[in-house]
Amino acid sequence: MVSVGLVEHFPDEHKPEAFEFHRRFLKPGGYAILTTPRNQLRGRAFYHIMADWMNYGYRELIDVQQLGLYAYENGFDVRRAGYIKAHNGIICTAR
Image (cartoon, rainbow, N blue to C red; front, side):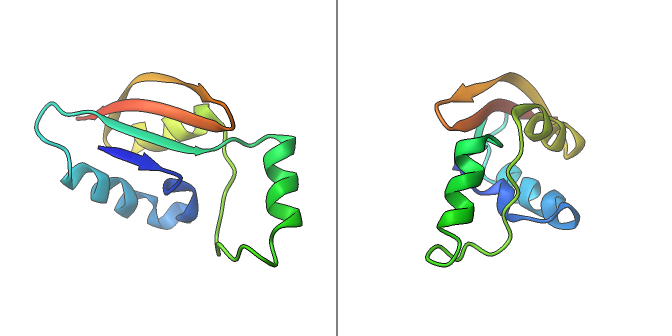
């Protein structure tokens, strides 16, 4: 299951629901690949400048460690983590 730029749109109190939604689409033993925009100067500047034209509502720019922590706290084991250009990426399995 692949999720590109979704988790960062959920406030902390709703992240468990977001991860549960991901879990529902996994086959037993399947992998979830999740990405989020990186918390870096270029990303912060882009979303600040484009805020009026791109109304994304809630958005949290996070680093790959925080993405992995959110996944772990919500029942996933992180198998691999890293960066994909301007995005964080993790590969994980459900516990």
